[in-house]
Image 1: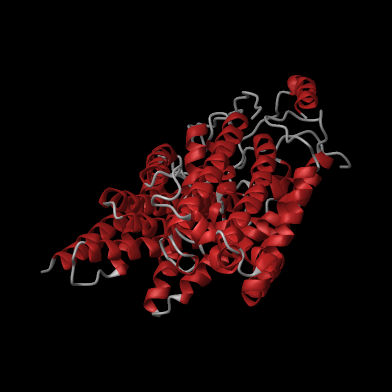
Image 2 (image 1 turned 45 degrees about the horizontal axis):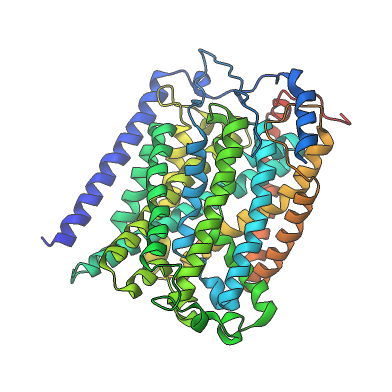
Length: 64
Length: 479
């Protein structure tokens, strides 16, 4: 086998290992955990602290 | 850059795994510059073919102004709404579901297509490397395209911190190779190796097609910066988005303007414009002209690393956009899952990998290299459509939440000038793109129109309407 052929074979083998690992992990997680628990509920933001708003606006006035 | 150190509020739930907040300004810089820097190594030089040497330089700076406004506008909104999906989340909160769906689709396709193009180019670079090393046998692109995308997808799957830390290293290396080329050719010393006056000093090579050539060059000026707006996708994973997004994005923009100017200067001083305008790897070719073996190796490695960094960042951004749309049920909710151990949108990452592989191998399977430029054009035009949304979106954002009504981690100065500049420059680049790719532009507009019809007819009923108001900002003015 030529060096080129060996390199291509190694690339295919590594690709196969990664693809199998990814597929198995997706399946494993889906089996082990409740589907509702896995789904992210949405943006993880709570109400911002409004106490700085006026200060920020003053700063904005000086910046512009 | 004026920012306020405001930790992004965290709502930990034991039931639902969430994206991990681990990123700093360094990672944001690595994400933004990493996606873009490949454009300095290839692509920008087609602007030379359209507008000549100085046409390409004017395009670099005018389009640089466009992207500066994008980064500044993005910084204010993203610091206020630090959510995965970036501009998709902005569209959701400020305009509504149909716009959000379109923006989310622009984002996903722009990054996935760019990732595919990067993988395709990477296989070409490896073949070139094998050729330089004296291999008599051509390297097949299939295994290397597949391996590049799967390996980077695996890295993204395992965690965002390692992914973007790696991007920092390889992007930094690629940027340093551009500086090394400038130093290696003694960029401050014209007349020795560099011949800017001879290669670009006349109308026949500086501005061969006059100002219409400069306008036509604008579409390729985008290559210098296309993708820097992707920093917004990582907002939900920043330790402090109001600090990291503005600092990382603006430092990235400064890096790119420096890199673009040096790239143009060195290439315009070393290569004739007819050659430069059609070259595939202009910086590497410039290094070859110097005759320095060290510079040739450095620039080849720089090109490979920049390509890898771009593909890596694209996987990160494309998957976040797809994930954000899915958890709001714009797409099947199944893709909105977060890995309980790695805290990444793992299903979105895995789903998009074969899509990218398919688009990357298509030009090879069909033996049609022009398909690669079609894939890239699709990516660029999707980005351009998003930019045309960002100006009006910012105007509306400031109207809904005027100054003083909410906390802003970064405040855009001189409003509304940047938004107006963005709209005007986007219109110019649209016109330039229409000149070069009129039919492609119309086809892509038709594609998004059909996708919108599908969304309204088949998907809108599933959309989590309340998600439009989850930003926990005060009630918008007029509502």
